[in-house]
Image 1 (spheres, rainbow, N blue to C red):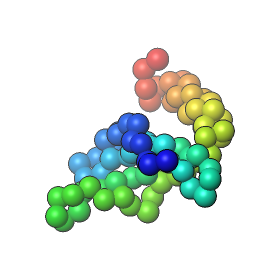
Image 2: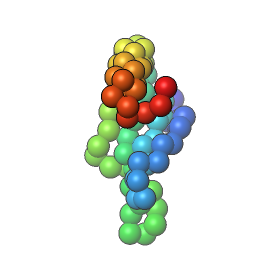
Image 3: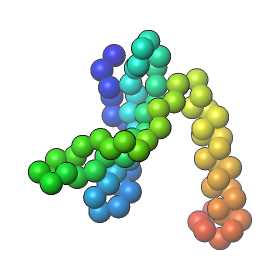
Length: 79
């Protein structure tokens, strides 16, 4: 399977986080990778990121939802 970019999240002026679906050694993966703008103005993948088997994604989502609830309690986000 070819890698399929699903979303791109702006991290800062020079970096984005790309969320993609990929495959490695027969395992389907959710790949969250930091991409940066290189000197030639092209976006390049950095070393920072996370590759997770697809069956682990629901646990990641639950963790992120819990993070948002706690951030809301601390007044860091609305909602």
